[in-house]
Image (cartoon, rainbow, N blue to C red; front, side):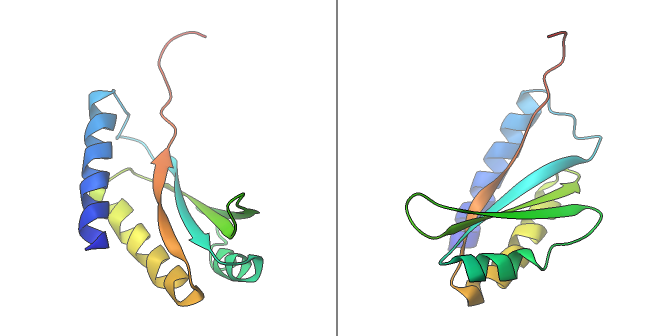
Length: 112
């Protein structure tokens, strides 16, 4: 059930990105988020993401628990995002964690 809800949210977000002029032709750093119960679990999960195209950070949540943010440079595709979210969920669930969504920064064209 959670996967269906996540899929619907991802479809909506990707559609809005397209409507907003997002550049799908190039790779972007996409941030994936998870919440874990404690620092040790968050750091254990983060240690699985070391490489050329990924970066992981952990930080405490005001509400309790710890955030895991994994940034992966990739193309923003429905399947690619879904697969990475699935893999992240497989990693954090045994540690008592839950997925908390994804996001990407959209660059605006023009002079600032």
